[in-house]
Image (cartoon, rainbow, N blue to C red; front, side, top):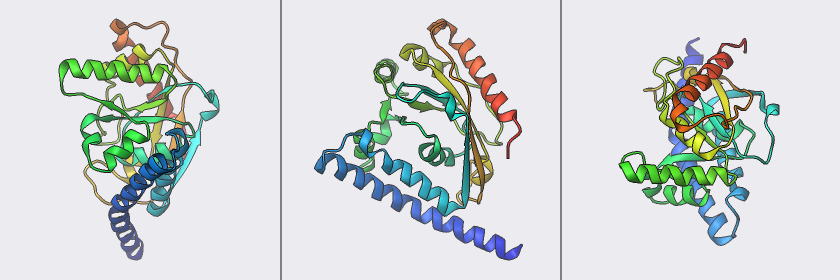
Length: 245
């Protein structure tokens, strides 16, 4: 048991050191692929996917995926997932099995190299701090999605402290309703044990991504955003409650 704890600790330190290096390398590779080799954003998505798989492998994390057969490749979706851990990002970008982009805070796009890579990879900036600008960025994001770009959102708005599902914020539903594309409930199980909020070192483990049936948005208006939030929260809760690993 003592040896296992030592190995786990050393693995966690290794991952903590390597993740920023890998992130920097992938950011540079993204810029080179797009600017010099003229690759499209879609053509370089293998880079963040590979990064996610490498980080999972280094961390000793195995990932199992269920339910992705319910999705139709080639059409846009908004994936609404619970948020247990920072590790959710690596797991989803590596194993969701669907081409998507991240919504990201505007401030992240100002980080040298990393921000430029995000822009070239087609990630969508959202201004959450400035009233009118926030609404404008939301409209722009909705248009990108309606035009065919799938995205992942975390409707809880923050990571869970104890791994339990938090309340879905109605504001997150406005984007889905404006975009008019189906929303897919996604349950992530196990990442809280791998890297809970407030912890720096990862632990090995098993993670499962459970994908539910897409929810049509056609019957909802912006005034019904709370109803949609409650419906999706209930569906993610059902996915989390299913027997798994």
